[in-house]
Image (cartoon, rainbow, N blue to C red; front, side):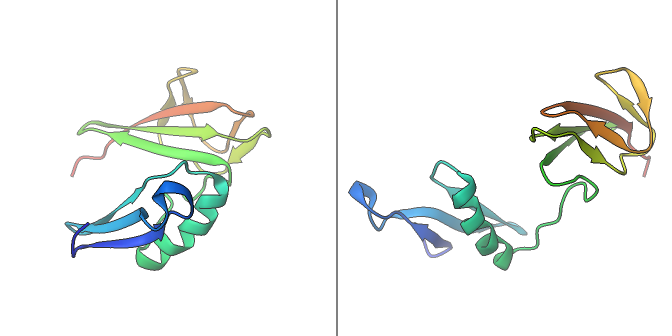
Length: 130
């Protein structure tokens, strides 16, 4: 713990009582938040507003509905978009990346994409030169 570290939450009870559980530290233009905990939904519900009060968080793909995780990996030539439906219900993503290829079905994708419960889509796109 140093001057550049702020404590966002502390442990309560047992041998860790009062020790930092969640800390934040500036790193370059961003902030690193370390949570030494099992991240339950209850904990995230309490922690997320604190994080949002410190930094602007933008959804990676704003068209993804609640319950669909989005992860993007990229290199100089391509982007890989992972859409993961964490729910027990079908989820429809109204807009998906342009000119994509679904790597699971090996088919071009356009328009809305519906993911079955607990299903995944991996969409590859070509990065624009620039």
